[in-house]
Length: 338
Image (cartoon, rainbow, N blue to C red; front, side):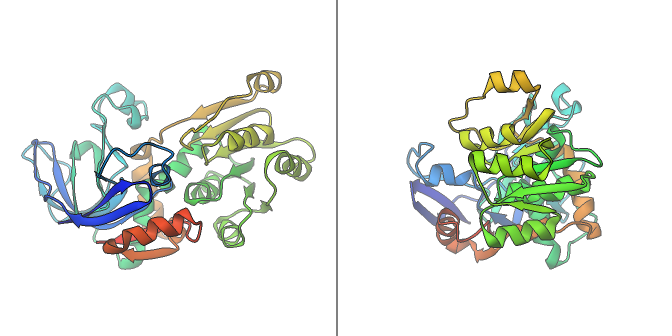
């Protein structure tokens, strides 16, 4: 089969790779219908995270089950499925508490930017759609695999409730999906912090009521002005940098929670400010499996369209072009079709 490899920073190639096979009776093999480049993949692509020789890359997928192990009971060959960006048994104490990303049997995927993928713990990981999806739903179902679920996690961790004013820091795919999540959870006002016109328009389409183009202290001041000096009732931090976290905490009203899902790089919390203002921080690796059934239902019903974050669609063989476009911020998120 064909698969994507990262050889060195900036060096992405598509090459032949062994077909995945059933290795354990709890495995499944999925033929990938759509996969994509993640913002977190760019940490390695840019050389910020170390790259040690050629490695398979990609952790988002949806597709059709082609084979299952002898112990798999919940999915079967021929079903269209979505999985989170990790595998879990969905039965351990952490899974039952709703934090499958901390599963006792957690395994990380390697190489979902490919024609086929082996899924460990298939029964606990994969969620089947109600039927074969029409082509126009595939991108949104793929978004459920990571970015929609991660934006949803940020909103859940921030405690978004009906009637709240919510600020979203980050206008990438996760932040834009966070706007959708805040709206679905009942926020009355959603402030999207974005400096890019195309992303601002998409944020508006997704439900943002206000746009703040300023960053840092100026962005915080703008949010304070919009809220009459109160601050946001909940804040979603969807970037992962120290400056983004500082901005998020600065936008939070006293007693608010910042839900953070950006992979932390150079983040140091301003504990004295948090202490003085009773501002909390909660989040981490998104428990996407917890939300998948509901998110798939929202997509299937037409209530949301998170797949619009994919503003570039390419064949798998052009994966390098997808990485380059996202690195240059010419694309929000690149979808790859094997």
